[in-house]
Length: 314
Image (cartoon, rainbow, N blue to C red; front, side, top):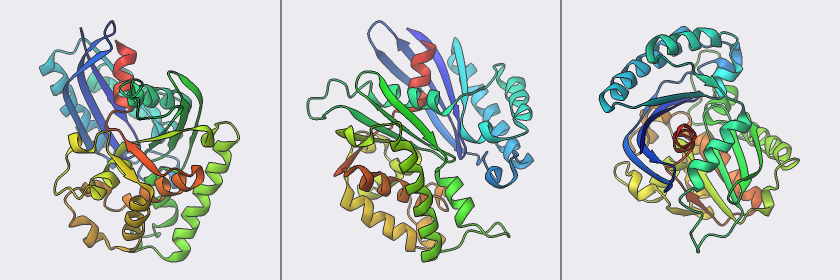
């Protein structure tokens, strides 16, 4: 067994997984898994730069994670940075800050590499399931981008497009004063829908979306929708992991999220405070994907890019 630490830094959140990995048996024993909303991608779509306050929030989380990694005695660390840091002009400031704190250089990976990690993490436990048809379509709805991966045991085709929940919210729902329209207007919702459909059309050119037989959904937007669908009174990753949520339930919840107010959403204990303003956009991405491929349900996975990164270290 090799003790590894995997860090995934996205547009909305930064996450840590410390685990013991055994490549010979395919076993991954989780020791610590945590997530912090840092909104690293704040304003990146508009300015092209990482905001100073966003960097400081991220570095504060890194300092916390450094203590956790040290306490567990992880032998190897891999830090992967995704959409926001790919797009930012000043990403060197981000790289230097992470190196100073964790002693490793963050790898600003491509969307295709991100997709491979997500696929491995999400499907490693599913390959022996007789009740799930192949090929899988793994969809990772992040803050800045969404990754689409089709494959069976390995990736057949993948594509990353810029329709993450934070990016859609900032692009279409946020005014010049930095406030999110609450709730969105029909015109704003239609603008988000047009962006998503345009991106799906682009993905279809290289990824056989409709060939997939099982849709697997990852990341905070999907797991939050699942928690709402299951009627949980608190977030329960065990209940959410491998739950199967129908299209009808996803559509119903998307309608509610798009017509509710900030205060109404924030009263629900399963919606993380950092997701209250962006979850509606994330739910709409999921709903339109399901409509596009005709999926009757989505299989929700709590295991994702973090698990794929951990396996890549081992």
